Length: 263
Length: 340
Image (cartoon, rainbow over all chains, first blue to last red; front, side, top):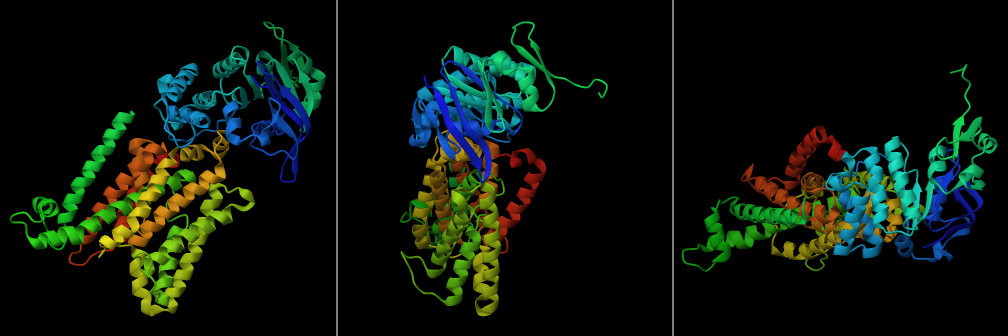
């Protein structure tokens, strides 16, 4: 299993800087959550870590080896990125979409082998999609489409799993379903998981470590209880924030402080 | 749909195409019933088989029917590929510049009275072939500024270049109005008078182009999903897209060189195939090809008979039928059309 490490990473779109000299490391068997306000560079960091965005400075190391010195296909055999689902109109079936994940292993021109089919069947089962395997992706709900994307990256059989907001727009049942599965992949199967999340409470419940980004820099990294302090969150998010303890799990629980008279 | 059912459907379509072809061989200035067509085809020296039947079926109509089938197949397969590649249901071989380039090439050849030939191609189809290849590649390179071309840029560049090329073509037609009719007839698209030579010259390129597209069905699936995902799956994006553009352009150019500009087959056949057999390209490309072949063979039957003895350019018919069908689709199946 493999460690993913960003070293002095600086990324920019044209002349607009997004990440500044950022260092972070994710280990096998742990779930590292990227948190922070909109536009701080969480997606950019994930794209750079997935070899989709060339950094201006610094590098990303997968098991000690620079991603940009590794062939794209070799990276894809070890590392998978699940982008945000965005209300897909795609007409291929669930099974066909999931089978795309086998491409880095099988190559692009050969037909599916029995082993590819077995892996596809297994991840469809694992993500609860077996029943709808022949339906078109466009016919599914947002939560189901997100599970299709998760199933596709699992079909890649990665050792490092990167996920960009996999729970956006999902109800509580789907959120805990997906995060529970991802947590299990890290803890039971030993995957290295880096996941960006908006919901700080969900991040605190499921992730082993949190990395709080602020203006393209790392503001804090560590276990949820260390990172999620009222003072720090109030500063980074720019609104007053109150932190208490979760009644069941004693993890931090975060809520904004609102002006009741104004509401 | 299981693989077995899909294969069976393709065999059925192929059988239907064979039936339609036999019927089409009988259609024309002289109508021949299927029994006489089959005798002329398979027992040319049999007892009671008329030599004129043999000449009509084997020398005149067979190459034309085969050519219309393979042109229809090529345009439809290229259309399916362009729609997936540009993630746009309105993309077809002609939207991306192939038509404008071919028309300008052909017009230049006609206006300047070129006479050179190459591998049996006359100057007009040859110039059309080169014109459409050059146009699609210009579009591709304009859109690929900075090492990256988005689907929407390719489509916009194609539309802009097509308009430009059509304007130049019209200008040439006006300046040299003695050749007006010849150019005009060519841009209508037609299969009148096509012989074994035309078939022999264009079939290899069409078959090669279609086979290449089919082989690249899975990269096409990934690109049609989205480019970022395709890249994260390890697909070399530029190479895959370049290969697909080259194969689809080659197919289109060969079809245009042999039959002129025949619109809408490349738009309608892939949509019909997608509704029937789904959007995964390893099925969509062969299914589109078979439906496209069927469509153009039938359209050419109509072109030969509707106003007999006058022959209509088949391009006018496909535009009439295809345009109507497309509007109907747009109104009734909006969800599928919007999809990819």
